[in-house]
Structure formats: structure tokens, C-alpha cells
Length: 154
Length: 433
Image (cartoon, rainbow over all chains, first blue to last red; front, side, top):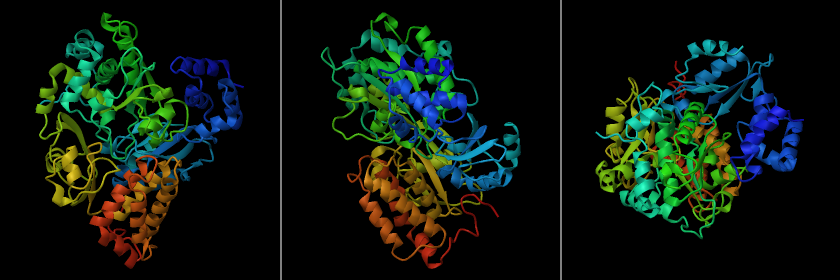
């Protein structure tokens, strides 16, 4: 069941588009902001609220990299693995993160604190390598700085 | 040197608010356009300037606008969309403009919307640009409060609503018709053209999609005229361009320079040349989907015609540098992994061909490449050439691959004959000894 707050936030999007369907990706983001990810049940609830079938909505949800259709940990680390970050040392940072957290891409730490995912070019290539944790951007990332970054996310 | 696009931007400082932007002369061009010019006159000014799209394709902006049906019988509502989905690897110029001077984009959009008599406008912003979202939201609210958006703008009777739409992460959202499908709440698969978006776009209505940097040029063209714009440039294409460099150079960054500045000047004078210990081997001039150039091309002017004549494309104008300590095969493998992953899956050649290329390159990287693999890769490049796929993602994807096979073929062959990556012991993808 969608909460009243979620419904209000979704409704606020309707005014921006000529169709309800256009707000469906925003609606998924609303639910994800509240619950961390979009479960099958959540998806069905949003679909019903928007007048779409679950299959229609899932075909949209499954397309977008930042809509999570599986459980993610408390904090999602998004590592840019595109070309400039690769040239400037992405591989070393990835290895260090894997060593520290004990997880690879697509995995979540046993304490549910971090999920690690790759992300396409973050558009800060003159400050590569770069990554995001949640909504926070980190540029010119060095292995020596990783502990400090991770410590900010208990 | 005139820097109209970045004149208000001070690195590390907050952007000008509405008051500051107006004090710097902002919104005067919009007032001039809306109060003293007809939409057709604004279109003519932009057409005469020769402004070409800064998103990668370089289509003449005035010409794009001219395809929009005008007059009382035009289908409504009409839309103007800023393509702010900057996800071309190696590209970071629109971020600079949106974070640095959000009102400039809004003013450009207002004038462009007026020129095509659009009823509503969207900024289609990629998910990851959180700071830009924050600053644009604030600027949009300021613009509404001051009467530059909404009803009866500047007392002219023109009405425009502007919405910030944030995406959810997928490269194909930056493709013109993929963007339209995404805006409509669908998968960002491409549409066949014709009909072109200017005739039938968002929700089937006339829609212009322009890149952020393109739109940021519009207020300056209206304020200063087509002649001024052409005069800024060092070549046939008018205006300035935000150029960028990333990779192992001394000073990676972005700079606004006259259109037609040479690769050498950007690389050596702005970026300070190669970082100590690194030598230049290749340049991808305009973002991931452009062909490699090499040292002999250093004096090529970075404008649309010159880069094309050299065998590549200006694209976004942000260069990625290949140095001598980085494996070209690894570099291309990374690029094709990106393109394969971002393929929307709609058409068979792209959906099947790009993962195949990525798989072949991964095998080469591991030293498991076989004789005949390079022929296979070249076959794929031919098979994914323009005209064979539904959109330009795959043709773009094979540009770095086909040019790497041309310029660095020996390196590819060594991976096969030596059964390992010759760069492994030196440094690969940034791993240091």
C-alpha cells in the first residue's frame, strides 16, 4: 500500500505532464526514496495508482539504472567505470573498495550498510576517478581517501 | 578574448542569483526578443549566426527551429526541451554551464521557446547532476517570481511554463527520440524519423530538443547579433566552444575558446601538455563515440568541418587522451563495454553486435584473442555503420573501435601473438607498480 505521503508526492508530479503515465518514473523514484528499492508489491501499487498494468510499469522500471528492483543496502556506492575514470585509475579504486568491503559490483555488505554498483560517466572527467555515495559526489578519489569517505556513511 | 558562455562563472563560487544575473546584463536579450522581435525574427537571427548543435550532432539550430509549424493552426501544445542528459563518456561541459550559470540556460530556453511559440519547456536533466538540479530549481523559482516564466512574461502576453525533469540513469535518454519516450514515461528506445520531433515529438506535438550549450548561446546571439557571433570564431562555424581535456595531462579541465581552436592549443596551452612520464598516443576529440586522432592531427582545428576532414567528429568537443602507458585495447574494451551495456536492446544489430564486440575485446585483453578476431571486429564495425541501426548509438560505438584498429593495429596483433597484454607489466588502466 502506498502511504499518503507517497501519494501526495506522486500527485505533485502530475501537474508537470499531460498524462499520468509520464509521471511513472518519478513515481517509482518517490517510492524508492521512501523504501530504498521498488519491490514487486510496491510496483503493483504504483501501477494501480497510475492506471498502468504491472507489466507495463516493470518494463519501464527495469530499463533505468537508478531504479532498484532488488534490495539495496543503506548506502549505494556508484563507481564510475567509464573511460576517463578508467584511464585515471578506476581499477585500483575498485580493487580497494572490494578489499575493504568484501563485495563486488551488484553485491551488498553482510551488515547491509553498502551496495556497490557501477555507473556510467558521471560527467566530471577532469576530476577522475569519481564516484557517488547516494547523492554525494566524490572527485579525484584516491585509495588513501576511501576510509574517510566510507566513514561518513554509518 | 570574449567568453560569453562562461563570463559569469567563477570556479568554486556559487552562481549568480537572478539579481546578480540581471546586473550582469542578463534577461535583456529575452526582453529584446519578446518585446521587439517576432518569433520569425528571432529564428532568423539564430539561423544567420550559423549556430550548430553542441550536443554532438552539430545540426544547424536555426534550421531545426524552422521545421516547427507556426501560426494559429499549429498543433498545440508545443514544447522546447533542453537536453541536459550529458552522459557521453569524457564529456563534462553542460555540467559546468548548469552549475555555473543556471539563469543563462533559462534565458536561452525562454528565447528559444518564444521563437518557436512553445507552450511548455522541460529541462531533461540526468539523475547524477544533483548540484545542477538544486541550482536550476532555485533559478527557475526566481525566474517565475520575477515574471520571466509563467503567464504574460514581461507584459508581452507570452506564456511559458518550465519544468525540471530529472531522469533515472540511461545513456539513451540523451538520444533525441529516446529522450522523448523517456519524458513520456516509457523505455528510452528510439523512434523512427520521419516524423521528426519538430513536427511530432513529445506526446505527438511539435517539439524542439536542443543541447544545453546550444541554448546558452542564444541570449548572446540575440543581444549582439549574428555578425558578432561569427566574429568570435577562428573558422566557418561561428561562436565559441567549451572544450575539455581528460586523461593523463597536467591540467585536465574545460575552457571556453573560439570555435576552431586547434587540438594542439587546447592540449598544450590549456591542459599543459602530457603529465610527467606520459607521452601522447591518441586523442578521442569529441566524447566516447568519435574516432581516434593521432599526433599528426595536433594542428587540426576543433570545428565541425575540420575534424570531419581529419576522419573524426567534433562531437561534444571534450577530448579524451590516450597516453603511451595505457593499453589501447583496454581503452577500446572499456568503451565497448559501456556502449554494449547502454544499448537499449531495441534493434538487433546493436543489441547483438555490441556485446559481441565487447566479448572479443575482453578476450584480447586477457591474451585469449585468436587470429581472425580483428577481422571479426572490423566486420562488426561495417555491420554497425550508419544506416544499419535504428539510432546512432551503435555507429558511434564503433567509431573508436574502427579507428583504433586503424592506428593501433600492431598493439591489437601483439595481444594475439604474445597471448597477453603488453602493457600489463607497465601500467594498465591506472594500476601503478
